[in-house]
Length: 272
Image (cartoon, rainbow, N blue to C red; front, side, top):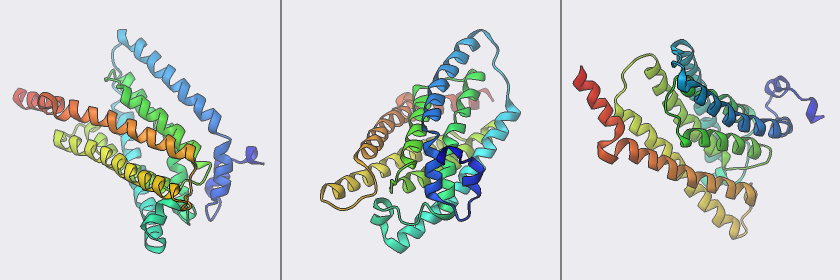
């Protein structure tokens, strides 16, 4: 029975069994949804509590957290990238995002599943923000909640273009968490690097838009595509909202009035 499956059974099945993983993940859909709702309540409760409390240092745990996610994301990028490249070279570029193929088998399938599960763990990012009394943006928690639920829901079915989404997200996160790791270790990283990371984040959403537009066109002409209308529109609307929110963040941080991050960097240089 699917309800009797455990994480270790799925993770250690060789070769990786996509159908088994889907069965197990299906049992988690409602629990992780309620976890995401509890996450919102918890982070805002902690934020309210921290108003009259000194921020926690958490330097050691933050260093370990960022280093672990940087390593995990880098490995994920390499492994899923290889799986995606195999699909492109053996079946063609278009088929790599319209048909599931062999991507969800073997190591690329395993790491895509781990990617899905990791979206719950990434809620820990927000705990570090509120406990250290750093600004908590709508973009941050909205992005975490929506991405996590999308990842779990769509993994339980065959959604071909998720291979691209997974690889791109792993790749961007490998750079992003590497940046966070350097900063948490007290190493100064120029603001232009942060700007380029945000550019990469927006670029992945733009690429996903082009993929979805093509998928939608092909489906409308009767070409078989591994997805459903619900998943397609869920993904498209989610990606549109991300482009708007990340685009606004980019404008506020790096363009408007010279860019908040660039201005803050100049102040630090002058103080030195």
